[in-house]
Image (cartoon, rainbow, N blue to C red; front, side):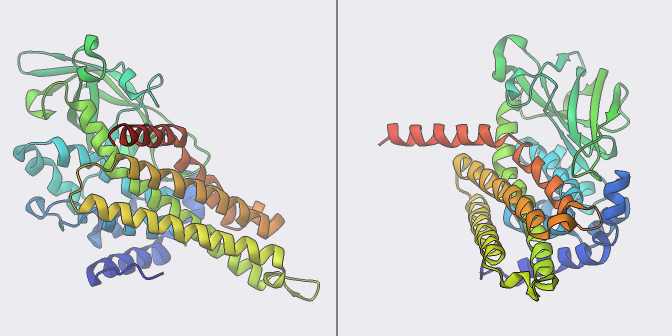
Length: 384
């Protein structure tokens, strides 16, 4: 479909696709098998200027928006969901600084992230606080010169590889969500360490670690916004970042679809290409329809966010739910079309299948997203 992208947006698409085809596709099987962080690929991504896309120009960024980030994430994920989330998760870790940081904090942290010299990570989830993010137990005790953090964050993308961590901790245990504050913690800070590296089903080349804070002292200058404002920063971050999950899911779905289409074209049974059989061709048609619908929704919501709209939580949840469900269906059908070959690691379909599943889970499960959407519908009805 024609999405009326500008020449700058098309150039981002071309750059990301060139990196995907030249550098990611030849390495993705080994990266997945060895659960190896893609350092060299991330260097290529940095060389192309892609980490700077969403960062304002005054902090050495390009000053574009969520749509451009989605375009790049989609193209990278079309080759490998693990590399796609490694790239996008640095944006997730940066958004709290962009949203809640003061001028000094933005100047201190964002330029190195824009250059790709440093990665960011977003630290909210804990073992007992996933969907219920307000239930975090990490605490930040105020001292004369700053704060002392204690607690453990779980399933943190970019984990040990990041250099800048945006961390959410309770500064007042009695206030629930209103007692959560946001901080920036730099790698190398005393008291910051890392637990086990997770052995995952999919997106295996992304680094997923426990991040541990033990009497971790940070200066008061690293508080983002005001005390008690952290939960709001986290929710605003998710509203801004969820189109990125949609884009990742679309890229995975597109990659799985292309693998299945090529296989169906070249695979012959009963004297003809299986693409000629209605049972197969209709499956591919449905896959193409759903991918295009998911892309349209995601791009439009990204444009809505970039336009400066004030409220887009419902729409942001929609473009996380629908594309991730589509990715799972498309990846499943890709394996079905490819039959036994699709089930084998010699072909990419099974990797797309494994990578797709997490898109329905992280940054808020699809069940939670539906709850957000339903709640917004009720509020809209009540306000009529």
